[in-house]
Length: 143
Image (cartoon, rainbow, N blue to C red; front, side, top):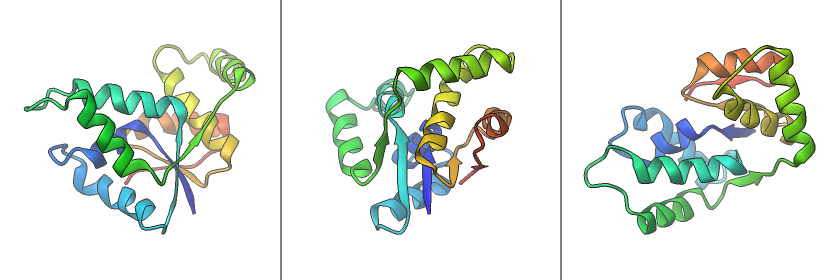
């Protein structure tokens, strides 16, 4: 089974103090153990780093610590790259659906899931992804 992980699940799985850690972490462990094919959109890698290093968490996660955490924990994940045509098609899809604002970033994750033929997107943000699922022909589930 292949699953695209949304940033919300990646961050929750990596940060023990996160309220959803207990739900998200087992999914990351399954990827680490080779029981699940974990995928993530390339921009989710950058977004995960951004969120980890700016969380209102004490002590703060330093840049080098965030890099080590990502490298150690997510090394078995496959990155899904989107090209210029993917971006253009995603923007067009959002405009045609009259969806605006930050949901475009979730739409890029949905595009990555469709492109990689993943069986599902794993997210803590079901509300937005459920709106995107029919537009991209993907399934959505929560951890």
